[in-house]
Length: 360
Image 1 (cartoon, one colour):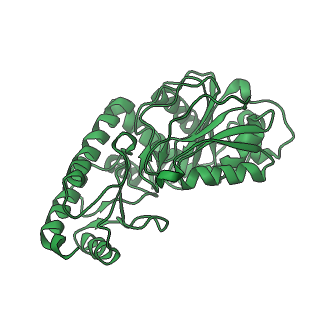
Image 2 (cartoon, one colour):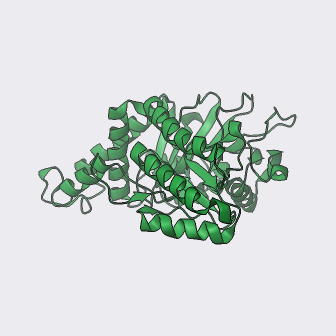
């Protein structure tokens, strides 16, 4: 690990592994001795075809999915998929949704705009989204149930997926390949790449092939057309897919999702242990619903929170400001954040508490 001058706790775009940054730097002038920068290679070239096919294979392996799933590399963010997924696979146009905060609400709104009926089957709204609600098998017939596995803003996550007979569709944007799930009875896994898998501009969708059927949707929304074109109906985000493949290879070389989850639990555990015993800082999330990747906390005093954020920045701990909807602070400990970053943050938290806890 290189000596880092700054630890970046941004919720996204987020850190890349140091080795990936170095590989990108090496490939920029001439990719694979082609004489062309990796940012210049054609998406129709053999060079890129190898990259995108390798990335698909690596992703399925890391997710422990069979080739019964098609991998699509798309644009438009996970937000586009809030509508695109139900339009493609919700045959009766009736789905269920678990409300765990901002992004599940956004998914509901976009699906409704696309003419989909959405039933909220569970919610943690009454608990201010400080926990993951219990999800029971719904009585009504639904095409699927939409879950946001990790809630970036609220700092909550599923430790394991609910055991239901209705299929699941999972927005995994903020814990994509950060912890292990058993993807039994899952129709679609999707998310933006810019937190754990790469850079902004790429959205990844893994969808069961038997759900990809002919429809009348426009090409850029149509899973069947996009699949037939290998995600290249138009020019795809070549550089973002190349970067994602480097991160996927990095993760495989570490030992896969099981190994990175172990590391993420060590990082988050260090920070949670401090917060649980702090006289100044508080984490509001119930322990069985805590996220490994997005940890929210505050002093309960806006002025003191702002002081912490500014002084942390002066100590090279950056992007710790919480989302505008909840305030306070948020430390995003995605896959590329080293353990040393969590240590540096806890060391500063301890110092700040010693200097300020009596002023709260």
